[in-house]
Length: 70
Image (cartoon, rainbow, N blue to C red; front, side, top):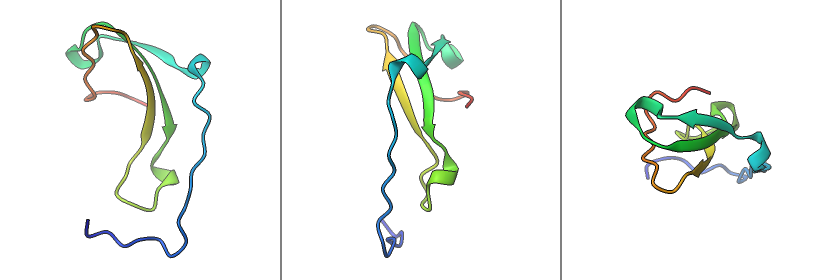
């Protein structure tokens, strides 16, 4: 809302391969195991979006986003 659209839409492609994920334990007070990888960073966007992350969250885990590092 309130953001100008690109005259030619930009489409990003990526490979979401679980072999590329890194283990994250109890991130910023969360519990359980999360596998994570930053797939697209700010350079991929011409909009207010900042990133796209690929996550696999273990059943019962309570991950939190704050404090994650690329």
